[in-house]
Image (cartoon, rainbow, N blue to C red; front, top):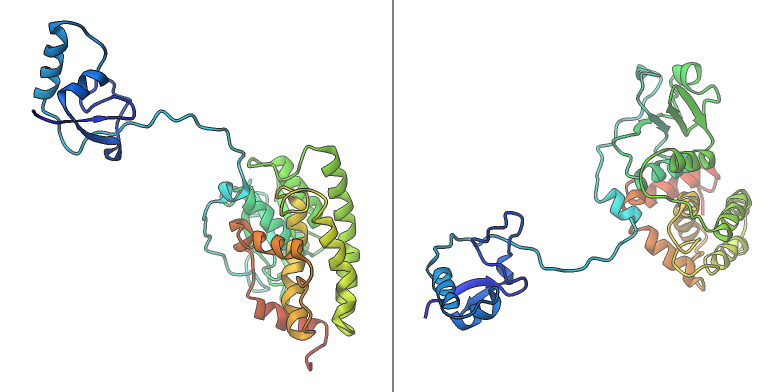
Length: 317
């Protein structure tokens, strides 16, 4: 008896009249005429034998066409990782005093940053995690040799980050991450839950104290930073999940650039491990390092440590 490959998942064989249904080779297997009778639409009498003979005599091309399994899909929430995928940008060179300005206010949305600035990095992460690499153009500025036109034509405050959008330029990193999340397409990075919103604002307010407490410890014992990291550990325990609000949000982006710098610096210079005795913080760092939108903005830890040594005048430890 001849054998026919028919999809045992959906019962559709090669040559089906449906142009929209196809069947994967992994869904196919050889069937006898008796098995075909059970798969094909039920018929009675001689017509059944005629139908089976007709199917067996039909010439099917190889490879066999494909057909999806009839699987019911569950709705999934779009995550930042799904939004950004594995997009890898070729980062432009930083513009300095010898560089010409871009065609400002020509309708292009531009994010002016410095590759080394943690405040600018917050907004850069947000832009990436919204999947806006093609919508918001990066314009890096050399902060050690700033072009005069940046202050004169773009942002009088002469700081980064700044966002050129709709013929206006806006600044302040915390305001910009909220603005980008609210005014551009992509997955929402801020929760609707009132309790989470309130806690988010509390965490935003604490950032300055966190920064000052940790950097003050650089001049003394690294353990002095412990209170600040204990606060972070407690904050990460409020909601279920590895992130500050349980779900990945703007709060994580606001803190990430600073913890990225504090962790290697304190470990190398002060021999102080910020994750020791803080499992929530350790997990948060691990999860953040998996995020593609954030990973694309990270600097070499050795470079960050050397930069902080120079900035905080601790060259000889």
